[in-house]
Image (cartoon, rainbow, N blue to C red; front, side):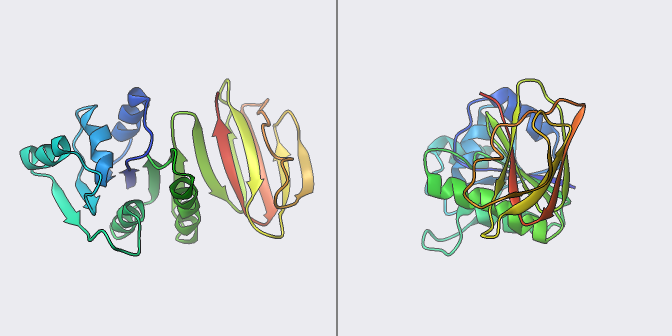
Length: 211
């Protein structure tokens, strides 16, 4: 089963949001993320969070559509997005996509992206999507389809860096050491039908980006 979390961060491409919604089986809105869904006239399976950012329109939408809710206190140990993630994990999903989890609050953006490692540790495929980026966590082999106009970056996120091979890329690598804090893996391009990223050691974020 594929689960989707929609939070209250930036969403501008509502055609993209609608397409992603239709690709998923179970939808959780984290608090004000419901307002994004209202704009495409889609109904989530549940809304969770402390309800500090949900609009009056959102509250009416919940009542009118009899949407299930799980309300939490404002003073809590998890963000609304992590609460939504925990809800999906309890439902035994195979894949989880997060949208509306990036934006002007870099602390929330970074914390939400690093939730992908938690998913990987549980054997769940995870990705963060916004209008310009798709972000994955990887520590083994990863394949990405060539999509016109997209750059691919591989960014080490552990102290020891990564040893990585890139096959099918404009700038290939063969068991190259990339230290933590290096920009070596930024803005590569796939030149074959697929690009293969092999992380021989370490952990990385893989980011597909378009301007």
